[in-house]
Length: 90
Image 1 (spheres, rainbow, N blue to C red):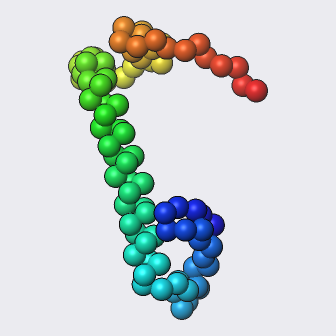
Image 2: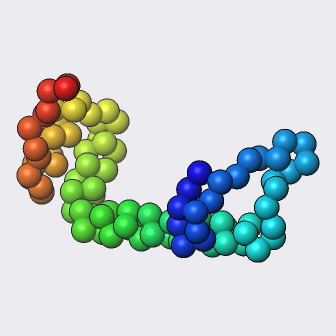
Image 3: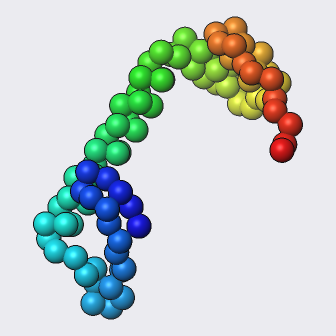
């Protein structure tokens, strides 16, 4: 089940006979998946670019030490961004 610019979609895998939808629908699905993938890539690249100094600091330290505790990770990241308090499990 899914909803996208391709429309509301419900598919079965078709078993041994393959999918039970047309080439046109297949193209729409491929296009929708590509758009989602491209948007995710763009978002990840923006986040990494904005946080490059922090990532470089982490990479430098890991190159030296090879391992890092969660506490040390939070110490470094807190120099570049506000870290929210840990939330208790609900």
